[in-house]
Image 1 (tube, helix red, strand yellow):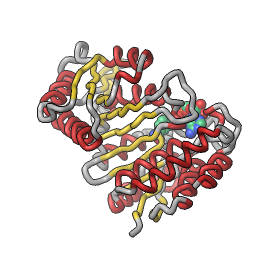
Image 2: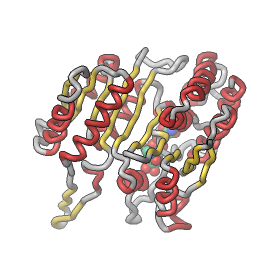
Image 3: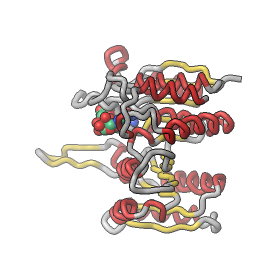
Image 4: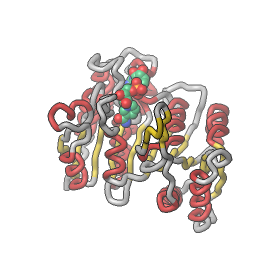
Length: 332
Ligand code: NAI
C-alpha cells in the first residue's frame, strides 16, 4: 500500500529542499505517491490565492501533506497562506520537536524538547479593525474549547511517548482573561493525567530560561503567537531553522512542514539545508507508523552529520544541497 501525500513545494528554496527530500525518501523505499499542489506566491498568478481551494481539497482527500515554505505576497490583501491552511483544515496543533543532532555543534548538548503551539486562535485569528484614524485594534481570540483541545492533545501525546513534564507558558499577569483561560484549560485537562508533571511560567521568563538551560524543559505548551516566536528560538538552540522539523496536526489531517521561510537570500543558489523538510517528512512517516524507515533515514543523516564532510553553509560547511543529499542517499 502506498500513502498518497499532497506535496506543496513552496516558494524560494522550497522546490530545492522538497526535491531533496523526495529523493531521499525514494532511495529509502518509502511507500509514498506524491500529488503536487500549488501554494504560496507561485500559486497567486494562476489561482488568485496563495492557498487555492484545490490544494485544500487535495489535502482533505489525502489526509497527509508535506509543504515547503510559502510566501504570502505583502500588501495585496491576501490572508497568510499558512494561517489559512491551519484554520481551514483545523490543524489546531503546531508540533515542533527540537533535538540536538550529532555533529551539529551548539552551546547546548542533549536538547530534547517538544514545543506545542495552539495553531488556530490568538492574534492569528486575523481580526483587525481601524477603529479611528491611526488607531488599529487587533483582536486576540482565546476560547476554552481550543485551550482544552490542544491541552488534551498535549497530554495524550505525552502519555503515548512517555514524556514526563509539561510547562504551559503565558502572559496571564498582563492578559488575565485570554491567557488565564488558556492556563485554566491546561490544568483542568491535566487533572486527568496525574502521572505527568505540570507547571506554568510567564513566556518572557521562559525565553530567558531556554537561553540559560533548555535541558530543564521537556514539553512546552503555548498559544499561537508565543509559540511561533519561542519555537524559532528553540530551533536556534540546536543549530537553526535549517534543522528543525514541524507539523500541523488536526483530528484527521496532518500537514508536515519546514519551520523556516523561503530564505530569499539564498534561493536558487543550491545551498539550502534540506534537513528541516526531510526531518518533517520523517515525522510524517512516524505519524503513519513507518518507524523502520524513519530509523534508517535518521541513521544515514546522523552518520553524514557526524562525519562532517558534507554540510551546508548554515552548519558551517560548503556542501551544496545536492551534495549533502547525495551523501545521505549513499549512506542509505
Ligand atoms: P527565513 O526562514 O526564510 O530566513 C531566515 C534566515 O535563515 C535567512 O538567512 C535564511 O537564509 C536562513 N535559512 C532559512 N532556511 C534555511 C535553510 N533551509 N538552509 C539554510 N539557511 C536557511 O525567514 P524570513 O527571511 O523571515 O522569511 C522569508 C519569507 O518566508 C517571508 O515571505 C515569510 O513570510 C516566509 N515564511 C514562511 C514560513 C512558512 O511557510 N512556514 C515560515 C517563516 C517565514
